[in-house]
Length: 403
Image (tube, rainbow, N blue to C red; front, side, top):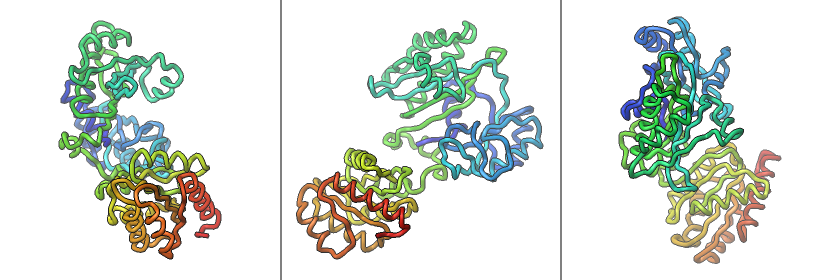
């Protein structure tokens, strides 16, 4: 689960970080009022769950700026806010349709003498959270990491103890903070680590950390993502969820106990088991296709879940064919076949359906499908299934109709 920048900053402030003053606005009047309260030049920051806002563009707008814009006057604030709230913001992470903006953070402008990067993730190679730092902060941090990975400094952080003071001190001096700024940088690192561990984050970033000409060290921007599996421990975090920013199909799937992630291809996948789902997507790619989604119905899928899964898949206009790949273990193949047939009739398919069954009672399941009289393509194994669904999707894409 992701949250907005202004929400991430509130969590950092509660943990002891220093951030520029800011006020959230939802219309030009509120933005101008915020400008008056802050008393001077401000930066208007579109609040969406996507990176690259500063280099983005507003689709359909006659504006030469992105989602982060400096404003010197009330008139500028009004004009810029109106554009930001009217047009979707397109960044490298939103896709070409962009993302509508409903909130803007009006933040006091800060004089910047220097920018630094701080971030925290779970390093699965060592099985621990890791605090990362780089003396070259700002929007190009990904390029720095790819070009010069040795510039990314790392410190493993114990989930039980947290960030040790000596670790923060060592990083601050490695980043060339002078003595009068080091304690402020260390406080920011400690706050970031505290939030990451206490709130079960999977990612937390301050990019950039800025040093002002008078030596203040501020979190100018913040980004946080949380482990969905840990949200039951954090109702205060779940309350920050902005469902308008999330994929509606993924939300719908979660309500029915389905694990669904939308992708960019044209072959819908319905699979039981996360590992099998990953293998299914891999073999589709191997045979020249592109999966449209990851969808795991779980080991105990029933008719209602299978039906809802089909509805979600077929609601995606990009889907040209569907592959059902089921291993009957907890749920036997004949039960799954019955659920697939019932859902097939109830939903009404307009694209080819390929079904591969394996496991307990597989022969009964295959017989049910073959004798159903429905236009269902059966497959003997996963390779056969992948080849058939890729061919079926290609035929639909070429002719525009099922063949």
